[in-house]
Image (tube, rainbow over all chains, first blue to last red; front, top):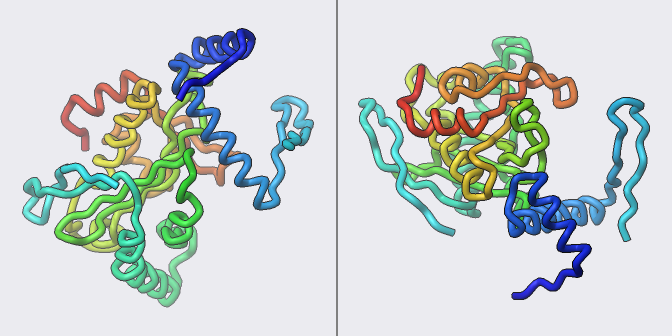
Length: 64
Length: 208
């Protein structure tokens, strides 16, 4: 299959690949794995929070 | 599902051929339920009868591989492996590819293969039997985790939380770095393997 990305999306993908020391295919794979896992957990009625390591403040990530 | 040939050390401590499967099938789960679970349940009953304190029990007695297999089937984040030899199930491993990133300074924030669960058959475990029937299940699985890490582009980096009874294996045999107890994960010791440690582990004879 062909993946069509905008310039901005391609920039983000390239930056992530460089930052994480991965090739672009692996970044996409990781994103898909994570997305599927989060979707599964939310379908089970669970919520996803981001916690500030210092302040311990939590904010819920909302997915549509 | 595919299998590949690996080796374990048999009763005479000579190499015997074993099959490594790149998934946990319903047949593997059935073997777990038929052969492992009764022995695990029996050990639990003996420990209760002998009034052995819970903190001295093997920490994985409650692991239910049937539930783990069901919960991870079709999930892309997981890779599941089974090891068989002489027609019997010798080991099971569950790997998570998105659960953790590196904590050691030289690989902080970088992706790694996280070994979520590893089990070896009761008859291979020194805490179940006086003499293990097969030796090397854990080593085979850690090699698999390292190879998977390389294939994923993670350069051999792996991480795991160890049960108390397995800490020496990961520290000494595998040469992983012990980052100490993780208060955020049941107080279990967290271990990590770097790219260099992975090279040493896969190219040099195992340390005892």
